[in-house]
Amino acid sequence: MRTRARLYAEEWAMSAEISAKRFRIAFSFAGEKRDFVAQVAAILTKRFGEAAILYDKFHEAEFARHDLGIYLPKLYGEQSDLVVPVLCRDYDKKRWTGWEWLHIYGLLTKADGKRVMPCRFGFAEADGLSPAAGSWSSTTRRRSKPPRSSSNASP
Image 1 (cartoon, rainbow, N blue to C red):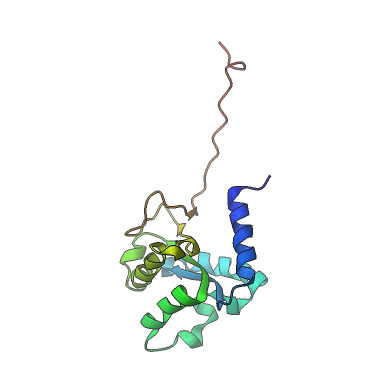
Image 2 (tube, one colour; image 1 turned 45 degrees about the horizontal axis):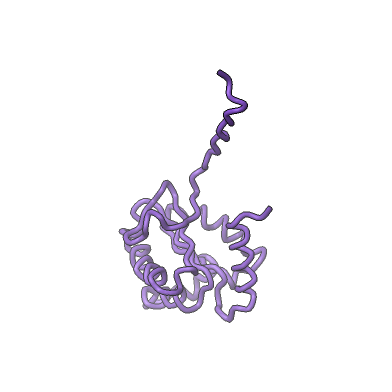
């Protein structure tokens, strides 16, 4: 049986196959999460190639520009199928990620909200992001044991 997350991923992959956007996935992250993002980006390049992943190390020459603060939000908003803000402590308060978050949050408040998939570290929050918002969490979740049925319970 396929899970809801798996079905969503398959639906997104099929719809993105015909996308005319430059990037399949765009990452926004603070420096302390670089190792995690680098690992995920490396996995994604096997499927999509470096050119289709918005990760700074794949586009260093392009990002060496005086107006990056104006240019980058356009890439998130206009040229990316899926935007993944990797949330960590103070993500929305840091200089660059705070600026990026303003633009990513703008996508969340429009019909483009389905293009944003937050990834949380340590239950991190960002200003304006609902605690009920769906996200992928890096925190390991333990499965609880199923409740014992009353017919199997001991007296």
